[in-house]
Each structure stands twice: as structure tokens, then as C-alpha cells.
Length: 229
Image (cartoon, rainbow, N blue to C red; front, side, top):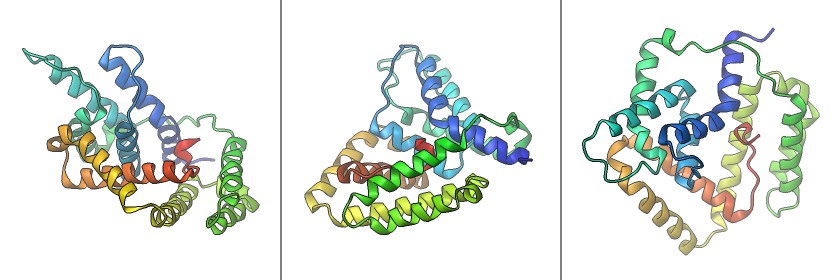
């Protein structure tokens, strides 16, 4: 039987991006809103830091409540980064009182076959790219013992994240100085309006997520994390 905390992790993890995206759209109240690369990176940085889904949703609500209470609202909220400070405040509050963070322990319907197909797709894509054969082989090794790895998705995610770090390291050495500089300029431009809302630790996590995403895209690399199922 799956432990309640493991079921909670799966429930939060696999609905993480979708729930945040939809909640932000509702809070913003303007229908379809396309998440920017910065928004994607911020959500991923929250996920990597273990920020509970409920803390993110509460933080979004708190940020918009504060925004709507202003007498003058000259600009709309156009990025999740506006909510970053409120999200971390909610995460800290929940950490102090875990009872408030209780989630349903119901087992979500995540077919193991979907995980298997995700890994197979990643292995095939990497095998076709020069320099990534060892990482493809690592994925094949995981697939050869799939049932064991699928029984512990937390551990599997750690393995996949480690493989993604190796991928990013390889890809980064193949980019020119100008390409890397352009990525950093884009990051600085996008995050500048929200820098005061984030701690140094938050900014460091966001920078890593944002630049890694850009490196993966530039190199045409697949994402391996179960976050991208």
C-alpha cells in the first residue's frame, strides 16, 4: 500500500504546473494567459525547492488580494513573479504548521505506462544526439528495471534530475559565449521588475531553472523530469 505522504507527493507533483497555471489565470480574471519562460522557470524552481502546491495557490490569492486593495492599479499582473514573495510567505507559514498543509491522500491515476513512455521517448531522443549516448544508456538501464524504479517515484525523479544536470552541463559547453550572454540578458530583463520581491536564494534557484531551460531548448534536448509528463 502506498504511504499517505507518498500519495500526497504524487498528487501534488503531477498536477503542480497545471494547477498553478489555471489558478493564476482565474486570479488574473482575463481568460487565456500564456505563461512566459520566466513563469515556467519560476514554477520549476518552486517545485525543485519543495514548495507545496497549496502554498503556491494561497500565495497567488494573497498577492492578488493585495493588488486589488490598492487605490491605483496602473498595471495588470503579467507574471507569476509578482506573487513570488507571497508564495514563499505561505510556504514558510505552512512549514511552521504542517497541519495546515494536509492534502488528500487519495492515489491519483498516474498510469505507469505513461512514465515508461516518457522515459523511452527521452532515451530515443538522446540516443540520436551526439555526446549524450551515456545518458541514453542510463535511461535504458532504468527501463530495464522499470517496475522497481516506478515503485518509488521520488527516487526516480532524483535520478532523472541528476541526468538532466549532466545534460545541461554537456550542452552548455557547446554554446558560444554570445549565446550564453544572450540568455543571461533575457533573464535579467525579465526578472528585473520583480527582483525586489525575491530573496537571494529564490533568485539563484530561478536563475538556474531559467538558464537550464534555455540551454535545453537551444540544444534540442528532451526533458526527463516527471514534471514534464
